[in-house]
Image 1 (cartoon, rainbow, N blue to C red):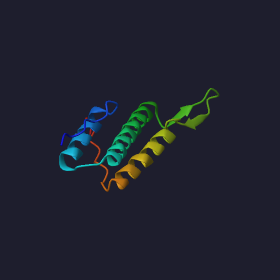
Image 2: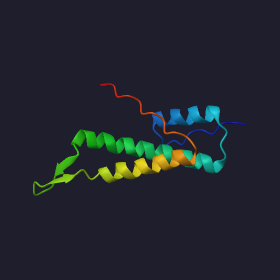
Image 3: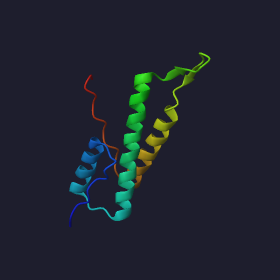
Image 4: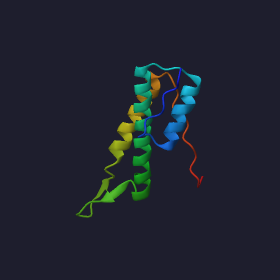
Amino acid sequence: MKKPSPPKYLSPASKKVWQSILSGYVMDEPALEILAATLAATDRMQQARAQIDKDGVLLADRFGVMKAHPLIPVERDASGCALRGWRLLNFAAPAAEPKDDE
């Protein structure tokens, strides 16, 4: 049986996770959809985290009042979706790859 290709919208890192998982497991169509959504949520979480890291957790509004970065809820929600997806698939979330500067 041919292994399904990862969705095109996933990041290269998520595509590697997809291929790694499917090299050891056979999944039905609903599980593949959950896996795709889980990896997409992980990508979204990492994108939000990168922007928050770049901009800072607090940003000044037009009046100079410090407010929480507007991507914090995006990161939180994507993180929750990713964790739920890994739980539904009975997997532990893959460990984050260390950054180059660490």
